Length: 400
Image (tube, rainbow, N blue to C red):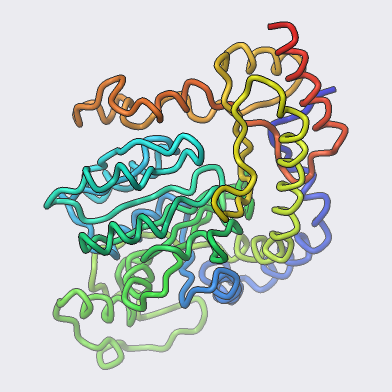
């Protein structure tokens, strides 16, 4: 038997009629950028997350960059974040000219350890970026308390955590601003790139909407005024009327922004899938429970099912093995796909060597990288396939 680490085709086949109908309707409507489906998706996601604003954009990395800029993070500022995450978390910080400051993780949740954050705060610290890694929310109450004491923004990287909950609240709605990715392997997945910013702050939402679209038009002028810049009212100077394809307002620019808009086709795909997200996450949780029962007596460290009142969305099911290379190789020979996330902690990535971190600087994150093995957990995984994975892991430890 072969068990892939992820299978995109199964979900597509299950939703194929509705997906294809929506795509064809979009093609016929010929509104491909910021079409009606984008606004509808933003409204539906805002309601789902319980926030005032959902602002879609081109991808999760852009969401992080836009959120940091909207929180007034500037060149030379410092942002505290996790070393155990995908590169984009720290890349976004560096991309806006700020400096990522890494602190070690909680060995249970694999998220930023709040007890280690405060010692890293300096006069240059502007924000904290916790990462809800593998779909497990960070300890956001403790992190928000630290941020409040030091007047810092909290940019929650929830790119892996849509649908997860923290003490009754949705991940991504727990800081000043939350960021999401709709990459094809995410729990809510587009058929390409996509991202989103979620916030209750009207000003942050306005800035994100302006910055994602060249800082232009009426939103650009409003954003510029929020930043204390001189901006005339484009309603008084623009000649011509928008007609769906032509928008005269976009030629009046007030900020240097970016080009990061969600395609209407992707919005329609996401609207279809959003209606099934809770069901898909529940299937992931069932898979996690079966792994927990089937692997409990082995010399592995398993992730907690519901740590401290949190409800993970199980983007990944990560076990900790002292023989990660051996286990990954054994499962590969058995036809089982795994994810070795993450092989190198961010503080030891070559690009960040000038920051001065060395091996041993953040030992818990380094240990997690040496030991973490992610098993197939996607909602379409069959019980037969999952039992094959469990049996293979048990064979590995019997032979060890």
